[in-house]
Length: 162
Image (cartoon, rainbow, N blue to C red; front, side, top):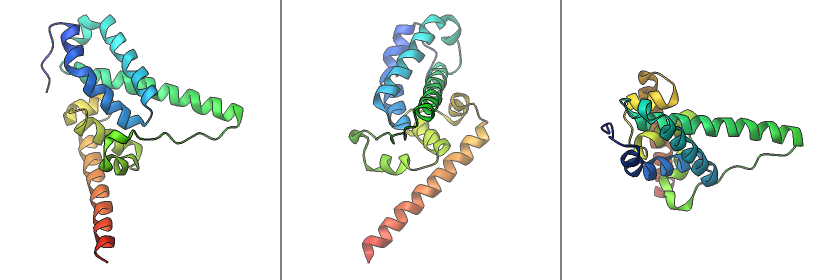
């Protein structure tokens, strides 16, 4: 758990890179993730008196960034429907590593929980806050994600042995 920072500048310097990298993997669209994180930090700066005194200001930033992403995804969906285009599947950045290719294929909630836990380095309580769900749901979601990933990895090992 990150202690409450005394200044926005300290908070930003300590958290920005990890939040941005986590959102890139969670969203699969670097530009969208960067924009959402920038907007979330701008809002945090404007409300720093309130945000800086929270138990988990980084979780708040994640939540705001995720809401920005969701709004933009909804807008894109509506635009695509109006223009009768097929949405293009976002691609995962190559630097994310092999396991993140498997994580990308998890259901949205599981993928987001895994990214926030292991890239975002948030606790289950902070993930619950960022995702707007209960802590127990986070725990179950992570367990389900681990089981899914273990199954895929086990299947891959079985195929290699043949």
